[in-house]
Length: 466
Image (cartoon, one colour):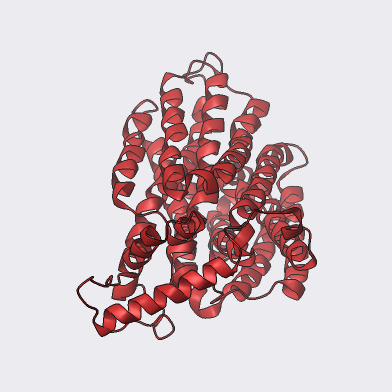
């Protein structure tokens, strides 16, 4: 049987896609671990600020904001480091290096004596997270056929979300010192699992290693390489397919040195403008900070249900949203999912703000289901588009020649905004109040909906060789 990319239905169960799916699920073991590290914080904060804290003294609100936000500064550092290394060392080497800071993070949590250990650990966790958001989207995009690239690229945040839930559960129900002993095994499993994966064919072609690039291409497309003693019709089609792929990759100038003109031209400047606006909306809408401080938000809403239990339920709603995004992104397209997500998230956050502003504490306590329902709705609708698709759209919009460096720049910007949002969210919640925080986030969603609705193109099915 001769495989044709154009003829394939967008089903991840096709034989052609087998190794693309396996490789994607394998590398995202570390994304899962990053999610566990992020999710660990929310249920741990009440314990760390109590008299039973393992620290010398309970942490304050200001220290809490630093513990939460330093992961953003670490992510910024990871974006820059791995963005510079990605085209020098390759995707595979960078994927191996990503596990090291995360392992140190869990060691620091275990041996912590004061809040500086947590500062250092969260910063290192951020380095892994920042590297993951640069290296893995490019790796997955480069090994994937366009028919399923959206679904595979969207899996990143699904793994993060599942990791968040695992982190919530572990830190809610297990002893503080037991959690790092369990989770430090995950990056070890990851390093073993990725050992047999090939470097991406695009990177190998960039480095002039054409024969290795062909083997990598055939590995990820599940194709047969032509034998020296003769070629079957299938082998011949494989040769033609790879030759076409190679020509497309090299025609984009990936072997040429990157110059300033590759960035400062009208089409590329427009692309960066759209990416930066998407990043601004992603973070300042509260899509990430919202889930770091879920327990605090439920406390503000006077929910009588255990806040950690509510956090786990909200995490489950997010997982469902991400599963829907994976199933819909290559059918509906990126643009409509993003716009639907922004509109829904804005309405949900506006409703939470109004509920806190207008309802009495007695009403909130007597109607626990209402605040939980609204929080679950925001979690679901954010996970349907604005959370997972940023990594898909950023990579797909950028030209092939500057994709690695451009993705690094975009993810560094994302990390900077992540730091800002994580730093100001607790200060806003405990300062001006939850309603003001929700109104601000809803306004950002409104701005993003209007501008991106007018300017953002659909990238579904775009070839990444250009």
